[in-house]
Image (cartoon, rainbow, N blue to C red; front, side, top):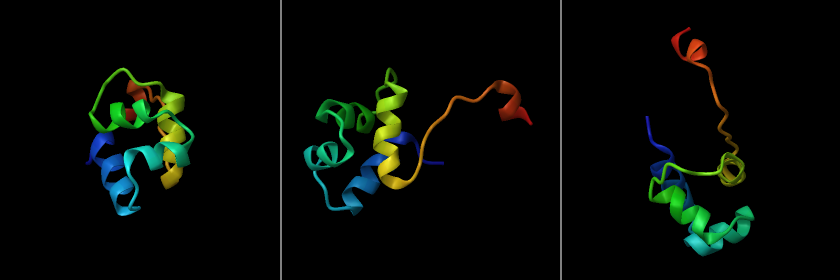
Length: 69
């Protein structure tokens, strides 16, 4: 399974966009894209979802019960 950083970076490059162009299209600050692609752990879920929506995806918290089931 790909991690978030790899997924976003690969999708952005496939779209032929620089980090700055992608940030503009996603409606987030350039620093958000950089932090995601660098694999930073302290990210705002709403900003991450704004980026992932560009690819038709979102993230949501799950409980440990959902993971084990």
